[in-house]
Length: 218
Image (cartoon, rainbow, N blue to C red; front, side):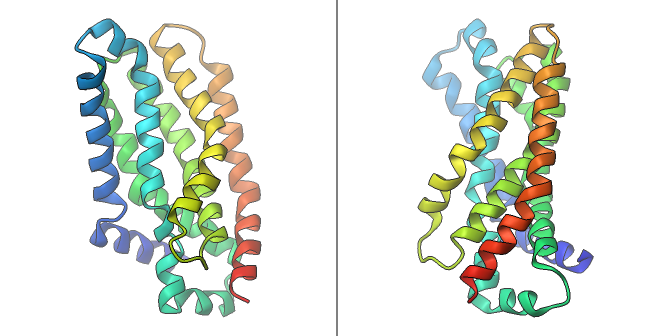
């Protein structure tokens, strides 16, 4: 499992499909928003939590189809299905590798990009905390969606349509955590709900993803 995790991380970094593409898209979204909204600092400060979370969510979405598709095309996924490692563990490991290659760089880059949107200084810590807690759920939900569409040609659009509605609760509570933290309000409730969503996805979706993979590999 450790070798599979390291292999997927190395492939993501070398190919640039997760690491570089996600960061570049996150930067583009953050830079373009002030041009569209205007340079008013008050407006940017108000919308910064939501924009940063939307940018992180869409950046994670870009590389979801690579989680299983490349292994499916070269036959590696068939070998993994017959290996002594359970498919549930394979799905969890691949989601973890996707988070390390895509989600973790976004978490680390978010405070720097928050400066561009004039985010209140009180919100930087909560931005880091909410993204660190919430982005693993994005990767796990994405792995489930990728497992559903792994056998389809040009399934990227369908994958987006399947996954985006499932991302909405994470987006709501993540942005609300940053918004409350930047305003000096209590953040316990949205942050705990965000953690509950992440723990729930990590507990349930590996089994759902494994079931989808078994159906698609028949």
